[in-house]
Image (tube, rainbow, N blue to C red; front, side, top):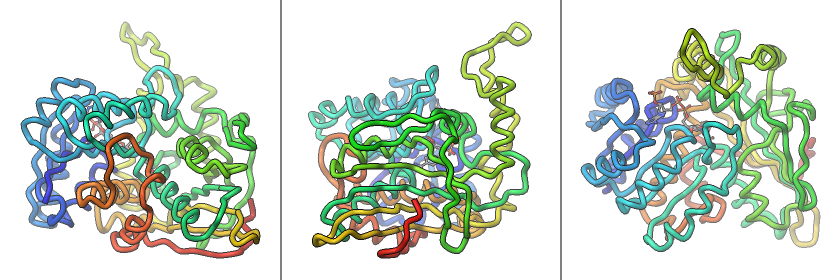
Amino acid sequence: MSKVLIIGAGGVGQVVVHKCAQHPSVFSDIMLASRTKSKCDKIAQGIESQYGVKIKTAKIDAEDVPALVKLIRRFKPKMVINVALPYQDLTIMDACLEAGVHYLDTANYEPKDVAKFEYSWQWAYQDRFKEAGLMAVLGCGFDPGVTNVYTAYAAKHHFDEIHYLDIVDANAGSHGKAFATNFNPEINIREITQNGKYYENGEWVEIPPHSVMKPLNYPEIGPKNSYVIFHEELESLTKHFPTLKRARFWMTFGDEYLTHLRVIQNIGMAGIEPINFKGKKIVPLEFLKAVLPNPGDLGENYTGWTSIGCRIKGIKDGQEKTYYVYNNCSHKAAYEETGTQGVSYTTGVPAMIGAMMMLTGEWSGAGVWNVEQLNPDPFMAKLNEYGLPWHEQHNIDLEV
Ligand code: NDP
């Protein structure tokens, strides 16, 4: 029985609140706090009518550490689940340290003024969390998150050494809009317009955006054009599994999506430098976010599936073997359960499971952790139980 504070009332926050409310024996008292309180209240009302569980709400600026500390001290949660934006990771970690509570997030810190995400800023909190006897779990969504757990599970049960890791992420869904992103457009566009990067033989190889493509087959979906991009879990996985000779991340993009993206970049709308507009400073990408569809509203007519998994090659008992572990998630089923589409669902469910692991003591230990450092077995069991069942294929052609 524990109190939990969830920060961020977007698509992912909505799923986390739903899933926590479904397990009152662990999450006995829930508060949702975010920048816009009306969004928290709307989610809370929906939960109350669906599950009869009362959710507390609060307005918070998660970049204001004293205000966060005050809120945490007032509500006294055992932990904070941060599903606001990556920009707020460090201030929320600071507040958790000051107020003495555990921390979990789904995306690594990114400064607002540089489109660059890496773990160095959050790994630098290691000693402070250790000394405070607190646990911080980083990147506990689907990717990063479940993909790290899949890799740890594969290394533990199916391989003596893993050598090649290809994380494959397909969204084979259709929302009927000409262009929309599936999670926060600003974060999403910053991520996918960067140079691609993968790990090979101890080095990072940088490539122009979307310059390496292969049509890969996804279970129940078929072939989808898949592009090598950089994704944050590659950084921690290559550190924690030093036997890896190569690690890459593939994401599917449709031609229409890439055309829109190219236009957005070419006309300067993906820019993050402020410009003057009618006497006001505006950031083009922030303005673009304001006119694009809200990812949280895509769910109603969303059909199709997401399919995310790990394709791994390595050695078991002296023999080379291959292994593919994946989940397919239906946008429609996600919407029917939580009112949001599959990308928010696949992020929010693992965040709830990670928090559950921490609150029940199945995951414990002072310090800053990436999820692959923790026991994957109870997490894998809960994925099957709580809406993200996984499937395995052995010794198949991995295509990559
Ligand atoms: P949204 O943009 O839908 O929601 C973000 C929420 O955070 C909004 O409610 C927003 O408030 C709130 N917020 C922003 N700034 C502040 C602030 N300063 N103080 C308080 N609240 C603030 O994003 P998503 O729900 O799609 O994504 C949430 C997180 O999940 C992101 O960090 C994203 O990167 C991560 N993610 C991780 C994935 C994974 O698999 N690991 C996949 C997808 C997303 P307001 O409503 O006022 O705008």
